[in-house]
Length: 527
Image (tube, rainbow, N blue to C red):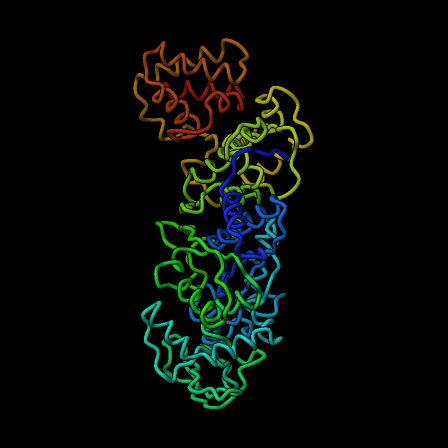
């Protein structure tokens, strides 16, 4: 491990909190409602809180890190990928809805567990809290009583902080209807100190229909849940949370955090957690991701697209005040991410004083080498992988200038795996290629200049047995000698062999195929 003199932002945050003398004991928390396949954007909160938690540990402080799966919430949005038969569960608590996939207890357990597996893979391992279990065990009973006993104060805070007018018969609790099982359609109308009176209204919300049942029930031991903003504050007190950040949708003035904080302090007599706003992880076109609406790339999907250390690196390297805009389907996004990862590794192993080295270190998900290994450039792996005649191990030994050791062979093997995934799922036609068996029709329109260049290139290729790097330079130098723009010269090569205007390094493309075949192809194109 390499230690740096300057502090990366999580260390600065931990230092500020420690110096303030507040927010003890240090309990870092994050939360997610598993209303569908959880999008990759939700990983942002996980990793931000993981970094803060680690910063406390690095400073020798005791700290806790928890993650809440808020599975008491109702299904209030319908993901497009669910079977239509699930529409009957709208309004029912997520933990009571059957799992859409085998091997899970419920819909919430399915999507929550899949997400937990992903962030565990990223070496973020908080204590997992399932809200439904804590409600059923009675851990929320005391705060439920406080919220109902102090309902007038809760209504007052809704008005004062968020400008919401709540009627005199409104209570911050929803019963799970004993008849239809829905929680999203019930309304508590009275609290007598032991039981709540409630109605399951048919038209309370647009997304679910109540059954019309009316009754009285004890609000304790999991018979219902607190309303969202009261519920958030209740979680803070029940768990003992002292640090929890949130995305800007929750941190707007008068928004969820402001109201929950006021309820936490004025109703539950518990200090609000330290918090800061962090920017979103944006989907294609700058859209905020949503699990219930099925918007954005899922965390599970992206975890199969990138090695875990690369996904963690993406999340660690972007400052919390900046939005992450990452579109796997954009041609260069994954290629550039690998390039950045390798560059940051250079900083780490060279012990340069910069955040780059720290970011790389904090991106690791397991043991890592003390000496920098050879990292085959990912975009080169992508290019060479597409040529069936290339022995990738020998090719990268040639580039490295020596044999690959066991560790480097494993790195290459993994990059080949992810290159294959990228080519199958994300590469555009422009970035995927193969040598054409016949003359590409795209080569029919070569200019006289380009044909003249290819004639000279044939002589150059036949001149001797070339090494790839020297031939690459010679190809470029030849364009100057033939008075043709380098771009036009390289296009002539690519159009003749693969029918595209660009491709992998031209020298490797030529040398990785039979010399006689390449010369013959150029001659055919020139005719």
